[in-house]
Structures are given as C-alpha cells and as structure tokens.
Length: 137
Image (cartoon, rainbow, N blue to C red; front, side):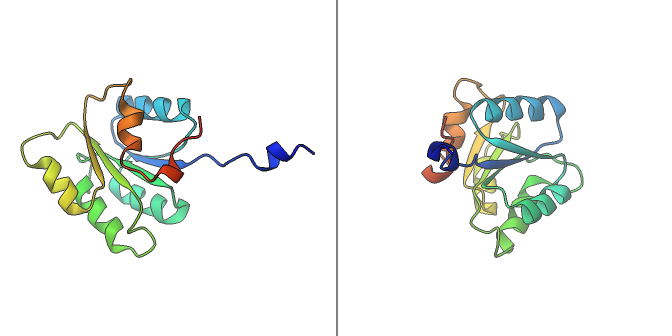
C-alpha cells in the first residue's frame, strides 16, 4: 500500500451558518474549491447544535439570522467549554459603524463584510484561523 495515501491530511471542516441561499452557495463553492469540507446550517439554533455535534474546525457566521442572531450564536458558542476556542468568522452585510466591534466583543475572531470578494475571501478567512487548520491545496 502506498504510504502517501495513508498520510494524506484530512480536510479542515468549516461550518457555514447562513440563511441566504445565494451566499451559502458562494461560500460553499469557494471553500470546497480550496480543499475545505463544508457543513451547512441555515439558522442559529441549528448552527449551535451542529457545532456541538460535528466539532468543525471553524465557523463562518452571518449576523442576520432568523430566530437567533449571529451575536447570540457567538456568545452561546463561547459559553460552551468544548467550543469556546473554535474560530468564528463573521461574514455579514451588517456593516454599520460599530457592528465589527459588536461582533468581536461577542467573541468572534474575525469580521468580513459582504459582498465578499471571491478573489480574496479565502485569504481573508484564513487570516483568522490557526495555520494548522488552513487548506493544504
């Protein structure tokens, strides 16, 4: 058996919590094209549950979600001992003065404004996660 196949690194898992199908599609496409495994959720409650059950390597989180907004999701994740150090990157069109600080104060590690630039998104996202979690593409 080929030893290289045995040593093939696993893809990092990214959970996207996004209720807009167009944004979800674009983020999924960009991440999968860059050798990430993508998990999806379309609301905050489900996102928290999936994060707890599936233990992704990082979370990309929208702020404007039904039922529970991204700030509340971030705070809930940070209160869970198993998830409190998981990188959370807010990707949102909620870009008023103070929103970035509000996201970071809630516990997010990074903040990227929509509309995202497909040419720079992966580099932006990777700047907020540990090097060991970055794609091996």
